[in-house]
Length: 315
Image (cartoon, rainbow, N blue to C red; front, side, top):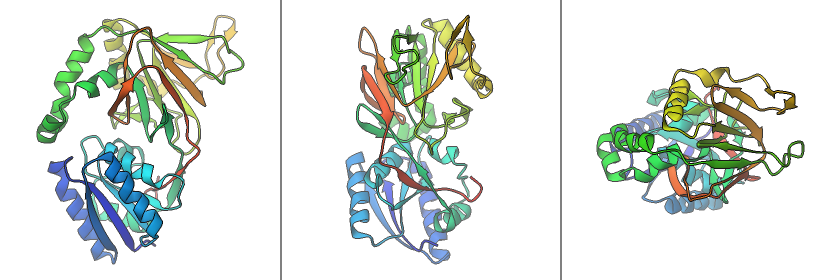
């Protein structure tokens, strides 16, 4: 049972969900926990506060209160330590909270933070930057690059409409995907117009992207949208929204050539791996956990510094 918590909250993001932070904090205190709240306005502040909590060893857990960006920052400060990471979903997306089925009821969230078990999760690394959920190149990175964060604070998910429409009307650029550790097909690479390398099953919070992905192992799942046309991308995204990725499970045979654990369905290929490299003939935007990162090339691998994530009893 955990009784002392540091809550690191993003004082800029999720203003409409600030009552969630207050409600969970009140429930924690009602259930006998002691809490200290610290506000942070940048990822570096999240990291520094979390590291200080580990060094002091005066709390039983560190809680990230905000969206996935805040959670990533706090997690970076806890990587490699035994300090448990808890979540109060108070951001716009809250994808990790949905991945672990945390729910939205303050009382149950507080109960999870106090009594829930921990799960060891292994982050990914994209050009050396840790991510908990996924990294992407192409379509979704174009959206987050264009996103107006001030507007997002005011109208939340509606702020994504304009950037999404612009990304859909832009012609996908060709991406080359290579698997450095693939000894069976060392010379083989793939082309796609949009790539997501994920540790998580879900995408956008509710859509099944990679049904066999698991936060707890070192595997990455590379989801390749093979189309390089606007129409093909829209069609593939509609298929994702309709749940078609949930059925991509069987190993694939392309002619007489085995593709190992490659899985394919209607222009979408999924492949588990340990490392992947994404390149392009011209710079293509990239993102990690819904935040702008840089442009290609992108080298992705698993981290060797785990995180102890507090999860609900039923997860």
